[in-house]
Length: 145
Ligand SMILES: [Ca+2]
Ligand SMILES: [Ca+2]
Ligand SMILES: [Ca+2]
Image (cartoon, rainbow, N blue to C red; front, side, top):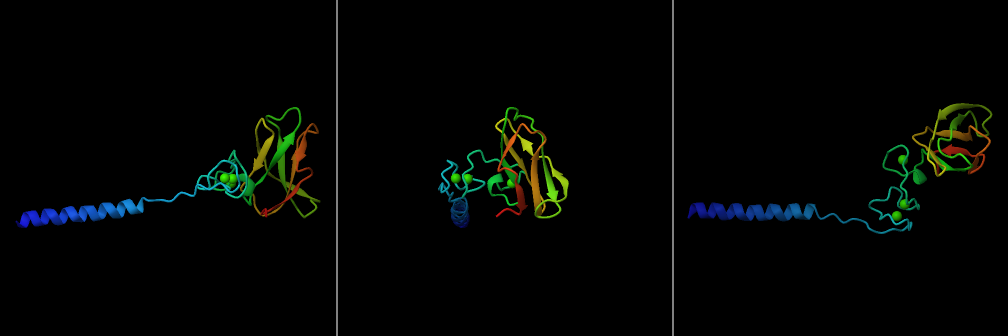
């Protein structure tokens, strides 16, 4: 009788624990897509900005388009792949002096990005006159707004 009672108590304890665990695993994913980029909010690295490719040059949890320490954009021109671009830190807001800060990654679609930058004014320049930048003649202030 005593053994049966102990077994019964153990059974109810196991059921209680199982119920508690199942409640803890009941995660409610946010499947909304307010920026309409086809990425649900719980997977979107910029939930409020359309970025279907989820580009994230510095590998943190925030996508390029909404990462305040990242400069990104597009170039047009005949030779996009392997394009050399430099990002320089300016000495002032109009960039009277500058120092090399980063060499952005580029791809064959003309997309470029440099992340994990310190605060300050930066200028993005191509290493060839064959290319047009978007935005043009950008002096970008980090952190972005
Ligand atoms: Ca989305
Ligand atoms: Ca997004
Ligand atoms: Ca990032």
